Length: 434
Ligand SMILES: [Zn+2]
Image 1 (cartoon, rainbow, N blue to C red):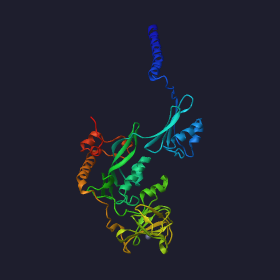
Image 2 (spheres, helix red, strand yellow):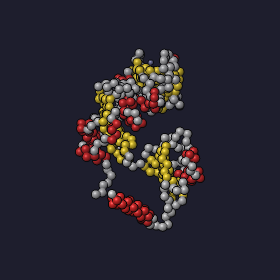
Image 3 (cartoon, rainbow, N blue to C red):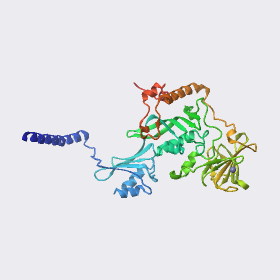
Image 4 (tube, protein in one colour):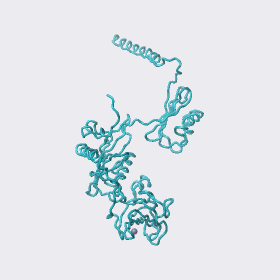
C-alpha cells in the first residue's frame, strides 16, 4: 500500500512543479517586449443598465473612479456621446489590479458595440459591428388568439410577427381578419453570434393562409430596392391599406398585457365601424391631402383625406387628432392621423371609416386597389428562379412550429440551400479568393 501512495504524491508534486514552472514560461513568452507595462485584467463587470441608472451611479455602485468616467466620456464624445444610456443595454468593464478601467463596452444598439479602451494611458473609443452570421430558418404556426401570441412569447417573436403583418398589410387586416385555424409558414434570416441565435433578420418569404385563402410573398432586391412580390412578380404594396387601424401601431401603443383590444367590425351603413378602445391610433390608408379636420355633426371629430383618382376616406368619432392635422396637410400611407373616440353620434368608442369616390360612398373592399410597380420585365427571369428555389424550400424543408423551443436552433444547411439552386449564391457577389 505504501508504494502507490508515494507514487501518487510524486505525481502531484510533479504536477505542481510543472505548473509553477509553466506560468513564468508563459509570461516570458508573452512579454517579449520589456517596455510593455503589465496590465493584467483581473476583474470584469457584466451587467445591464437598469431603469433610472446613469453611468455616474454605476461608477458609484462598483466603486470606480469618477475621474475615469469623465475621461471616458470625452474619449467617446465624437464616436457616441455617453449622455443618454438606455435601460436594458448590456455593458462590460474590464478592470486592472488597481481597479482602474482597462476597457468598457456598451451596446449602442442591437448591432453595434461601443468600446473604450485604455491605450498608452489614455482612453480611445471605437465602434464595431457585431459579427453576425446569417442563416436561414423555416418556421410555421397557426392562429389561436391573435397574430402575436401565434409567434411565441419572446421579444424577437413579437418583432417577427410585426414584420409579417407589415408585409401583408395591404391584403390582411391582422386586427379583424384572422380566423382561428389560419396557418403560416415563414422562411426568415436568423442572425447568430458565437453564443447562438440572436435575432431574426429579413423575412425572405411568407405563406399565410387566411380564411382558406393563401397569400404568398417573396422578398426580391432590384435596383437597390427591397420589395415583396407575389408568385407572379406583382408588388404586394398597393394604393390602399386593408384597414385604417395598423396592427403595428396598435401593438406598440398598448402595453403587452393588454396589447390587443378586441376589435369588432360592423357595417351598419355605408361605412365600416371598428369598435376599439379610446386612444387606439388611427392611420391613413393611402397617400393624400387632408381636406377636412374638425367637428362635423354626427361624425364628431372627423378627418377627411383626398387621394388620387377622386377617392376620399373619412375617419369619424375621433377623440383627438394627431399633431399637425389640418386642411392642406399632406399625409403618407400609414401615417398616424388621430385616435379612436366616441365624439358625435356614437354609443361607444369606435372608428367610423368610410370611402367615397367623387362624393359617392363605396365599399373599400371593391375598389381598384392599384399595385406598385411589378418586377421589371428584364428581371423577371431572375425573380422566377428565386421564387422556384423558395418554393422548393417550402416543399422539402421542415417548418418548426412556433411552440417548438428548438425552432431557432434548426437552420437550413448551406448544402441544402446550395442544392436548391443557390438562394444565397445568387445574392453573394463578394469576390472569392481560392
Ligand atoms: Zn359608422
